[in-house]
Image (tube, rainbow, N blue to C red; front, side, top):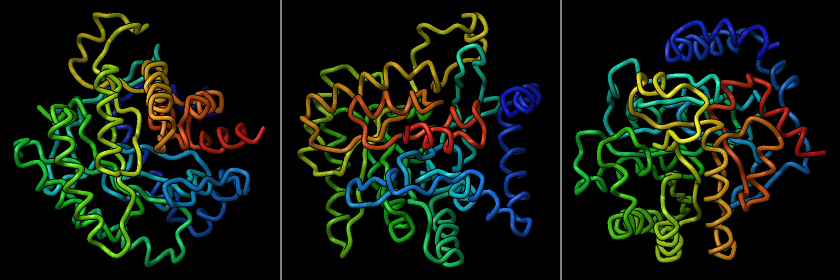
Length: 347
């Protein structure tokens, strides 16, 4: 019903406008007494066979929502009730920032993909941490693992980026279960330069030093781009070993426009930005497989990119991922997507 009736109506309107409309409706619907319990009954599969213990955390199921949907940690409760085993909030930056000018989110309907150049629009890491603490206090035992995806402000020079990441890390530390260090978004000028071995090693080593100084360190993961060469992926494997971080999230959006079914002129009119969804599925799986094989499976990988179905999730898991995340698939497949994938994984 969602794909046949609701999606065509939603797709008549601007993508970002519909995103805000949908999230507002979601919050209003779950404010109705009994709605959360009903949603859990309808959308959640509670089966111990789905549980995964990865980097010291036990996930109720392996299907998570990637960063980008709930940038400001406003929907963790609702999303957990829709069956996701974990939710990654953000990307958050130390200071609030509006992001890039609109329009900045576009649909590639023929490709089941998106192009975005949002630019880390968010209200800041402090307010996000406050909302997560409120969620923990009001919900008691949380039903979902929460990841904090952290980045730097657009006007912070790369030479000063560590300060931004440390601020986010410190503010979110008591409010999240793991961290995702985002140096791979194509929409913040110069950010991807931090993926080079020397600056990335310095950044992750400093975060690990801060992390290990605390009584209960949190898993730190690195989110990488799908556009890295094999040589650069070899560097990533070495950096994980050198810094001792918990694992890798593969992958972020791609700057490539190759192989799109959407007419080239239409894509060109959309402008720059990262492509997500089905167009990145094959490459993200290649990256996962390469990292897993070349590292000997020495660290966990969260697989992201083009996951719309249980078969897509199985592909990532077979390539070496321990968990999977989706974002664009949630847009195209609707609120029952986590349930359908988890049900399919049990077959």
